[in-house]
Length: 402
Image (cartoon, rainbow, N blue to C red; front, side, top):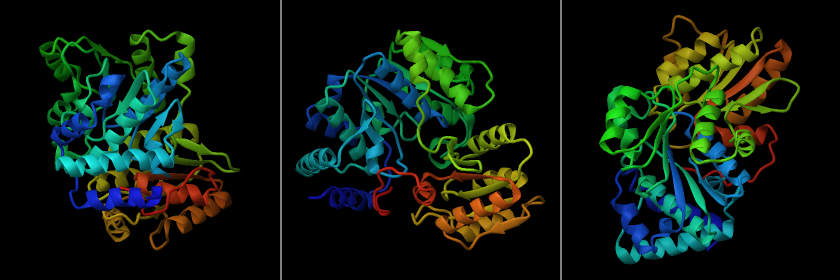
């Protein structure tokens, strides 16, 4: 079966099952596949924001230190294969097909019914074992305690940040969310936390597990500096040399305050919750104090869309509201209705254009008034935006997204 057909099958078969938090499926499938995680060490990273960037920096630092490193992140921007890489090289289409076919066959035989993320997580683990990695750096998908990645027994656990997101699953209070993220703490395994993670809530949990607790407690000017500090402390804990750490800290994932080389400032950022949007706009305004903001944005329905849009409406000259084709997407009509309830809103609200048309219009208008373009929100608008901006990279067909 071809790569496209098999990954479409993965989306189709798991779509009906939806999302199911818990470890039983992953544990059973992991055992049935010969326990691939037993062949490599791992670092497990959870957090509301920053976990993908920290994962990338730690993986790059270890690679610079001559470690063979697997990296697992989610979701993807342009191709499913972005999620899984070894030493910076994505899993090939052929390897996706070969391992996924094995996973489907074993799951059918053992009557295991994994979710999309569980299948993908086991795909990563099997690939890392096949490639004989020394270390795997793993980003948790959602929460931590019941996330599929939590079947590993890492040598270091990291919680990058805590703020409100996925509240319908993780809880509505800081204490509830912290408890879910802290579920990655393992007995006697060091735990590193970022500045926004409540030390007072984590400390007793770490003590109960006899886990050494380390923290990054400084205040930083922007998320990139904070992510670098967390990754640096993690790499120091792993006894990586300073020169290799500095190399690792240069690693960046796409759509994390990513500047596109054009004659006007254009940034892509997957900030999609209030904390992320606030940090993004604060950083952009500091970097570009005077110029107008043209903001293209779209969100998933399960986010705090009202708060995100309120923050954007206060800063944007023009807003371009868009929606991906996914069923999780908040419709543009809903976004527009929310904005019109605010006391402060932009000069222009553009709400009847496709993602591609919105990006083109934003670039055109910013060129005319000396402004900048910020494209932010859900991962699922970024693929089309990147195509319009002429970014040359592997791209899957539109339907290959979760």
